[in-house]
Amino acid sequence: MPDYRLNSRSPYYIEGAIPVTEATPPTPVQNNTPPTVTITASNENPFVGETVTLDAVATDSDGTIAGYLWSTGGTTTQVQATSSSAACIDFYVVVTDNDGDTANATKRICWQKVPEIIENDELSVNCGDTVNEGAFSGQKVYNILDVGDKIGNVKIAFKDFSSDIYANSLLREIPVKFDLEWNATTQTTGYIGSSNYDSDLTANGVDSSNISTASTSNKDFNTELTINKTAATPSQVRIIAETPLINDRFSFTITCPNPTTLATPTHNYTLTATSSTADFQYSDSAGATQTVTLNQNTPTIVIAQKDSVSVTSGTGNLVEGSLGFANGTPELTIDLNTEFEFSVDASGSLNEKQNIINMINNELKDSFLTYYNNDVAKYQNQAYYNSFVGERFIKELSFAKKNSNSIKVVQFIYLDEASQIYHGATASNTQTSAYSSDLLLLRNHLNAQTSYGNKMCVVFCLESTQITTGSGGFYSTFPAFSHFIDNVSSGANGFDGANGLADRSEVIFVRNLFRNQSPTYYHQKTIDALRTLGYKIT
Image (cartoon, rainbow, N blue to C red):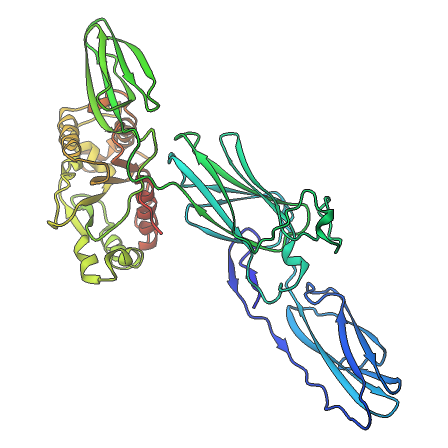
């Protein structure tokens, strides 16, 4: 049965049955050699509202055709029909010869929903998606969102839909050209579709000798297009589909790089001159030698190959941080040994507990259960809720394993703005000794890991944007929490290098969550955060 679009902006389809009106002609009368009849149609697959011309082609070997009678009531060789709704309707004609013998024929016409033609549309797709596209003219651009900084081949494979409605129809073979673009480089299929189109892509119904720009292959073939993404940036890869006619339909799947190891491991190195000036030399991600000159006590972060950094003049310190991912972020997978802990500060005004528990037991379970072999007990053992009472949230990020077999641990911390005040920071956000010790503790935990992805943390920040008055005046300092998160995540105002978290890819901050939302809301934030960390969530 034909597919229908959910809406004009969506590339996806739902299966939809259309009504079929069947008709049975009367039994033919035969006295001598009966006549024969067939029906031809000007269009067997019209759109709703279009008129179809039906012609009866009848002969009688021992006489003449004396009369015609159509199911529509017509009595001539030709009738016309239309439909105001999507439907398949059977039409029949009965012909009678001069001896009174009869013959009949039936033709089914299927009217389809009129497509909304969209020109120059732009859509977002993801790696691994299969996109089913319907009627449009002009150009459509598909932005592949999650290629990101991955290195390697991006491949799209095209094929036509299988459809009874479009079988043996030129409409299903209208040519479409696909381009795959990255960094001013383009790979193209040229036009793929029927060979019954001339160089102007106008259907002419003649042989393929008239073809110049149109491919002689059609969309039933699994045409593939590959582009090699050779660097982390730019990160955007685009698919452009273009047709000067009204395209019928097509389908394509997207395959993206999936590096499990980095060809050239790089790290974030924090460089600091301890003399008046110092020169540092290192190999960048491409292997080129770079030199940077720093003034005393003015640190900077560079991405360098492991163990390639040295001080060539003056004196200075260098601190190796997390993997820099200049050559692409490894794609992470959830497996039986992946542990998820959801921690909520229960000491203050945070009241998210029950909705987060409901999310873990319902929406998240539905998403992740297949990763745990559909074993509910195993899932519940590896994904769980844990409340904590305390002000210094970073101390909670010990990544302690609940289960001895866990290899990868992801800790989700739900934190409200009150955490800032207990460390005594002011609105100007001077770094306090309490935060310094917390950050050092966290970095020690991260440095103890052997590879990216074994221990990770997502901090969900529920932040206040207005000053309020509370007991003891504590709440008047809430806005300072946003300043702290800004600085610790960006490396500004004294939170650079080992003093903050800007160089640690294992820790991300999700800012300005709304309070007291539904489990569905927290589920989507969780999935989005995991994808940011590099997890492939299907």
